[in-house]
Structure formats: C-alpha cells, structure tokens
Length: 74
Picture 1 (cartoon, helix red, strand yellow):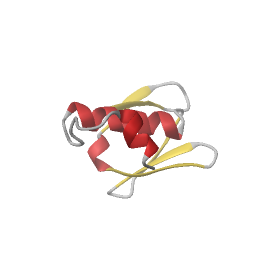
Picture 2 (cartoon, rainbow, N blue to C red):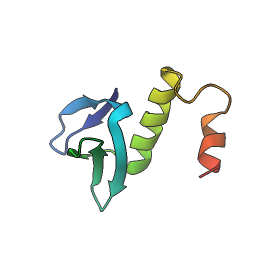
Picture 3 (cartoon, one colour):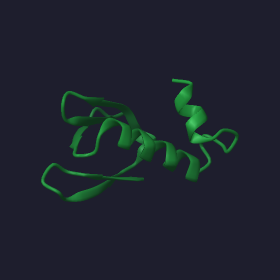
C-alpha cells in the first residue's frame, strides 16, 4: 500500500499493485486496473517513488538495482 493525500488534506492508502496509470494535468490522477480514478495532492514523481519503494519492500522488483539505476533507464 502507498499513502496518498486527498486535495482536502486527508490521507489514505492505495494498493500499489492495482495502479495502472499515474498522470498529471495539472492534478495528479491515479487510475486503478478496475477503472477507478483518484485525485491526489502528491506529484506524479512522488507517487512513482512511493510505488517503487512499495514494490521493493515486497520484493516485486528485486534488489538487483538501485532506484537511481531504475529511474535512469526510463
């Protein structure tokens, strides 16, 4: 789960495994695989970093590369 914040300041958690897309225009919108959309206060980069951290914590991405190496490949 990643912690995000509503625009009104209240925080909640989203299961990062179900995130399909993160976009900014200008608010950050997280779209889940079931089609639900959430508008959050965090930037797109902050959400991406939280997702990477979550994936690493449950060993989805493995520990073969540093986060910086992963970001440089994009």
